[in-house]
Length: 449
Ligand code: UDX
Image 1 (cartoon, helix red, strand yellow):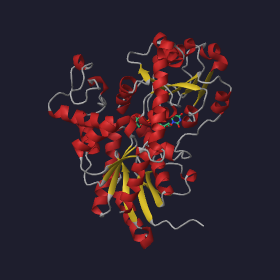
Image 2 (cartoon, helix red, strand yellow):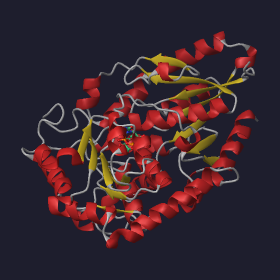
Image 3 (tube, protein in one colour):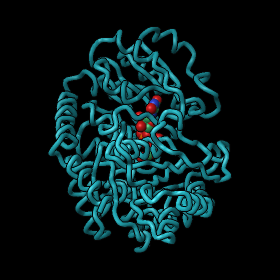
Image 4 (cartoon, helix red, strand yellow):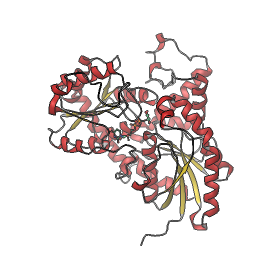
């Protein structure tokens, strides 16, 4: 019989795929350490509870529709979530506290940093809170830099400065900063200030690791706070069976991968939010076709503007690639990246995708779209040098060259080699005695203290 669990942790999730995944992974990790887990989530994009029978799920109404997400700008949506969820979350916590046994008390609230309303609610109820940062330390530092540059009157910066290095960040250029160009700038800065502020929280959990970002984590701690930080990434490696996919994963692509030659397939996915248009789609398609490499391409329904799925693929493309290409709506990505046939990943550089790729030693082609994706693309191509970035407007011959370079050409050998070496370093981090493993143990001690 299972030993009785004695402490409950409430995890507050943010309703986007790239945020749900790490939160469920953290829940799985803490459950394995003996905690009871409640996941508080919005009704919109609620996680699939049936896949996690070990957790309790509590939905709070936020009054947003899928249409709002599809058509609204992300900044305004996140601000609205923080306004609308506060009272329902407070009611939800109060109700849980009323019903809880003395041996099932809420130890703390852990919240996604975009759901910062949770901190105020927890604080009002005298419950400690911990921030979960689902992106990189580099992206937080770049957000802090934006706030500082704004203070000093540098934003908006002129186009002529876009290639210049940001003084406080060195490796990043102005064009890499995650500045949001949609909606009212004041809303963006307001959101940034909230997300960067640790408020009354007792600690910060990071889905990153020392071998990737130790100097940046130290810098973040020095600049921002005296509260403990726990870098326990890559969390998916501590919770390998945990899937948070909102869309159905099409496993038929694994059968297709099984038939391909080792390291021959380029995998392409733009994540859960980025979208492209017909012109870019045509360049991507012909670039892939002309590279002569087999490819597995995730085209999310609705991700090509003006069509439901793949109706806008150029005429003659499917016939020209035949069995050499496989297109799916959503893939079991971690399984794909770990598959021996996969030799490269063309990615939008969402932080989860980057961590999943680095953990498997797969070199990358980076085509970032917005937010932290630009920061990650720069780190992949310029700092860790395990991939290259497509910086210009998409062009089929540039794509063809990039695919061949990352996958087969001699020129890309060092990139492939470094990706393999970084994978080994990451393994050392999460194995017993490694920095992430030690951090996780310290986090559990901290939560029990
Ligand atoms: C969003 C932002 O775009 C990103 O910048 C931020 O870092 C996190 O939130 P998203 O576009 O969802 O991220 O990308 P990413 O962080 O890579 O997360 C996508 C997740 O979906 C990954 O865990 C990936 O494994 C999964 N996925 C993606 C699948 O399971 N199947 C797919 O076909 C594609």
